[in-house]
Length: 64
Image (cartoon, rainbow, N blue to C red; front, side):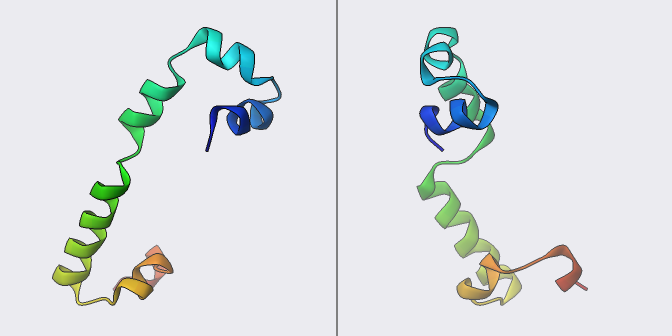
């Protein structure tokens, strides 16, 4: 989600989000980079035996 999209979702323009700052740092702390996400999905697939296509649609009710 871009800063502009975030501002629209919370009902303000992108300018106040830019001025107040912290948005980029918070998202970096909360969400992994794409490379890390791919590596985590690959490792999870290898350890669990679930195909990569199935990981995306996996829900908690699917796990025994």
